[in-house]
Length: 90
Image 1 (cartoon, rainbow, N blue to C red):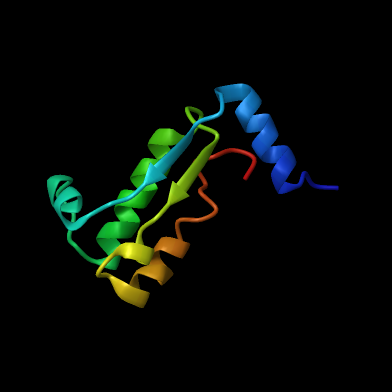
Image 2: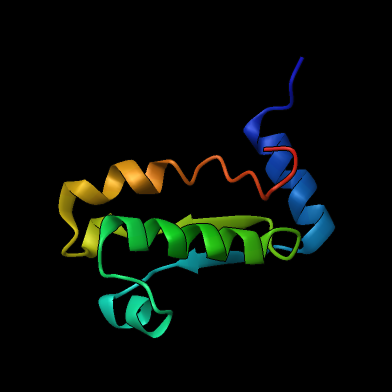
C-alpha cells in the first residue's frame, strides 16, 4: 500500500519543519529572472522554485493563474510542474 498525502506531509514536516513556501510570480519577477511573461516562463519559474525548495520546506503552494493576467493558458504548463520530480517520495 502506498502512503497517503497526509502521511507524506507529516513525514516531510518532521524532516524539515512546518514551513510552506509560496510561489507567487509576477510579470516583474519573471522579467528579473530573465523569463518571458508567458505560461512557459511561468512553468520555468515554478520548476526552478520547486527544485530550490526540495528538502528545505515540506510544502509549496503555487498561486499563479488564480490572480494573474495569464488566464487559462497558464494552467497546462503549470500542471506539468506537478508532481515535482525534485521532491522525492511524491
